[in-house]
Image (cartoon, rainbow, N blue to C red; front, side, top):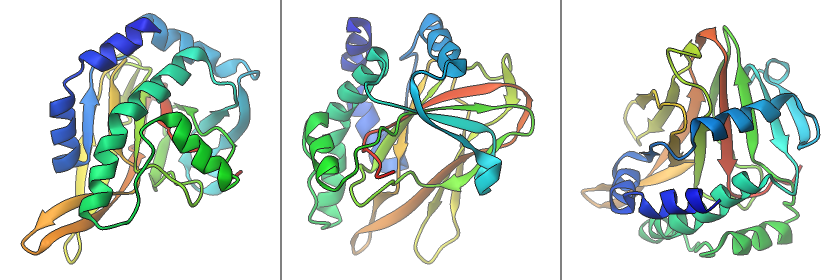
Length: 237
């Protein structure tokens, strides 16, 4: 656990903050070791840690399966969620301020969960996702209720071009009165992709305006792709 905290504290948070402001995403490389990736991935077939399994094709979300962890979360995941939130909350608050949203998020993750629970959002939202050949995830936003934190994290548990091919991480940004901008990322195993859940601010000639963002996964061509999704707010179901 101390290793995770050390890596988070040593990360280039000035650069990450700048990237989030300008691009809506940033990559924190090598947050997880190979052993940690294997450990999280190996828990996929054990039903004990999970509260819910979703077969994506049933709901036209894509092709693949994901599982929501139940509370209490595994220690490694809990630490990642807690420590990263503390770093990201000031960025989120600056976004809300420039967009005049009248929202300020607590500076601790415990504070955010307290707000979620007041709105009956009490279910854990951290999830592990598995895609096989042909698997993909349609463009979406992970909101889960009235209280949602505008950033989330995906940790790569598989190595592109070794464990799988295809399966790129995709972000679309809808700029008002313009065509959507598409970004395609290929992070490595152990990397953490920090990205906006719902929106980000963009500065225009008349001040800041809101850019709406969705994310998804392109089709996996070969192999298996595992990821861990860390969403900071809780869900109402």
